[in-house]
Length: 158
Image 1 (cartoon, rainbow, N blue to C red):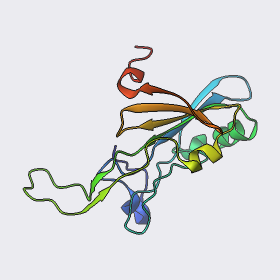
Image 2 (cartoon, one colour):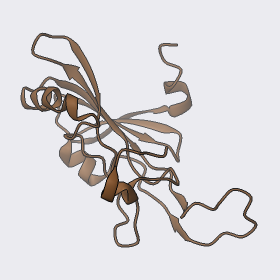
Image 3 (cartoon, helix red, strand yellow):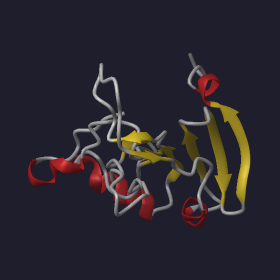
């Protein structure tokens, strides 16, 4: 899941290899009760100094949606906050057709992390998608509540 969110001087933060950052989306309603689905800015890309990947669920990917996201979060109207946990792998990703590969094997925590659980609020549904395990975790402050196969989850509603 490569990203081109960052521009200009910050473009080096983009995950051109894919699988090394988090993506998130916040779903809820605005003050008029209309459903809002707002993608947030992608999380930081893996680097040797920082082996974590997080997605800022309070920063809209599209700046034009920032005010709506702020209002939704402030008013407690966010009903679902979901994010993906990166698959990881060899970083940097080998070039197509390369015979040998060198780099660092990066592995991310796949179930909801302590940071994820601390950020959860019992009044909302939180979802962590484990791309490596092919699982979707539904959880709250007290931890895991349920899991569902990711490939089946993708087919829900189709």
